[in-house]
Amino acid sequence: MSELICSVNKIFTNYLTNGNYAYFNIPDYQRGYKWNANDATKLLDDFNKFENSNPKDGDFYCLQNITLVPSKDGKSLNVVDGQQRLTTLYILLSFYKNCRKIEAKELESKDFVDILKYSIRESTADKLKRLNNEETDWGNINPSSAEHRDEFYILTVAESIKTWFAANSLKFDTVWNKLKLIVNKIEGKSEETIFANINGGKVPLDGADLVRAILMTKSAKEKFSELKSTEKTNQFCVRMGMEIDGINQWWSNEDVKTYYAQFISGAIQNDDLFKKDFSINLLYKIFYEIYKDNEKLKNRVKHFSFDFFEYGTDFDGKVENNYYEMYQKILSLHLTLKDWYNNSEIYHLLGYLFFNFKDRGITLKDIWTVWGNADSKSSFVKQLKQIISKKIESFEVDVSDEDEQSEEKREKFLENVNNISYNWYDTATTEKLLPLMDVIYFIENQGKGRLPVGYLKKAGEQKEHIMCQHPREDDENRIKISKKEAEKFINDFFKGNELKSRDSEIKKKLEEIVEKSGDEIISPENQKEFDRVIHDYCLNSIGNIVLLDSHVNESYGNAPHNQKVTRITSEFFGNNHYIRPFTVGVFLEKNKTEGMIKTNEKWHWGIAEIRKNATDISRNISEFLGWKK
Image (cartoon, rainbow, N blue to C red; front, side, top):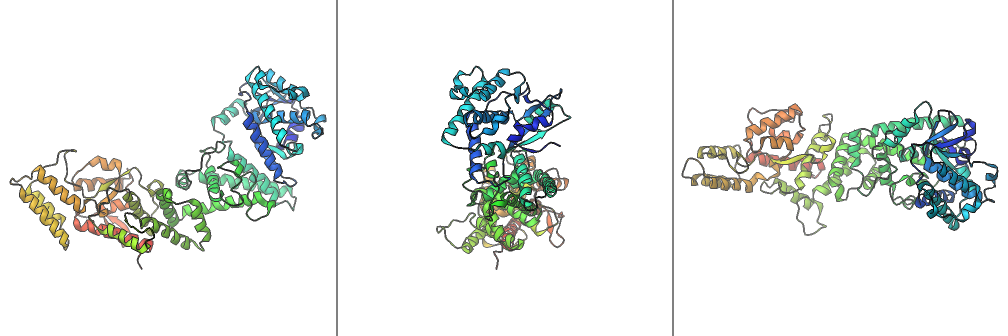
């Protein structure tokens, strides 16, 4: 088995000869060389940063992968991936050989002039050879004199290297011995197929590979540095690789990704090196989100990138274990997030918070701090409820004093919930409040499953009146009703309730509207007035609103109540569309003792049910969040 990590020294001296190969070859299907001055300067800056970090013996800077496949004739190793990096290193070594001779004396005895060739672009290889052999070429670099694109980029990079060294320094030993590459040597497969897979995205070679490589190699060396045991180090590398693969597998679950993607702030941009479809990258983003502002790390990078991970983390002040410490931190974070996801209370509370209030000051870093300060899971859950309380208690509460006590805010909020004339339909608050009722249901009935990830907030649903306005044939035409039908509606609507004074007033007003019509059929004008009175009194009460799947809601329009109940209950039991437990609960009778749901013999919805539902919502929120003493 060939080495996984090789130094530049190894690559440009005996890597080829050990396998009886003559040179590295850039196949004809590869694109040309196209690194620019910024690419080369950034690479040198990174090398310089590593050198200035005072690396210990055995520390190294790890560059990205190069993928090699033996040629069919066995004479060369074809560079399937990594020709840009390999060519740039060739140019850099040529600079040392010709412009830093005293420092790079070791290169005098190393003949690597013909180590890199191009299948169909011999002129590219010739330009590289001249930079390697001719010191005078470095004294007169002129990219504008290039005869083709490859040559232009080669001269541009050479010029940028020369310019960089005029203002900076970088020891030859750092590049020669401490700069290493991850080498994937693949045999027994078509190089064209491998190239197509890499460039088609089927083989994810990105920042996750680099993080995996430094964790596996450097963490193991740090852990067993005192024992100096190659066997134990290799065993640890294998075990860590299996752990990381297992972590990636867990994060590949679509529900997990959807859930935790909400925990990431919009400020984190997708770094080109970390592809979106590589599952474990979400864990690395969360790691960055939590620790990016740490005093020892915040000046390292300005955004999410591999740079954040390349030197490990130092929280304990011991520089000799930075990579192993980072591995432990990432592993601990993964296990904690997995535990949160599998815990019904925490899953629902955190999900509700992040899916509904991320734009109102909820951050993962703050939640992580709360978790770190909590002495138990129950304490953490209690504090999550307190955070939810602060968000909820400000809903629909008009206060002049921003510092008004929470208890007073809660009283005003609950007053609005219990007030059946309060308009909850025309506010976005309802879309955040109703999912909480399902969160409460699942938490209090643990073992009954969980609320699907997408339904922790309003999800492809509409606000629906439980009791709608007068049924219509279409958007404009009401179904004509007789006085007798209207009187029956009034009696049914106000039955089963010791009428409050306001109820009696509304009932009397509706009866007067019905009597206005001289004919047996109520006139359209009186129907409109009838509907307006109902609308203003209780139609938009929180006790008369649910969230309902848009397809189901639109399928029956403004149909009579019995048709609506039949449609919704059939969807609930048929599982064609997801119907929320709270939504179906108002159309079915809940047997709270057994925690089951069963149908009524005859469904009824009137002023008593609207008021009771509003009262139940108020009570459930108060009890769940601990508002009642």
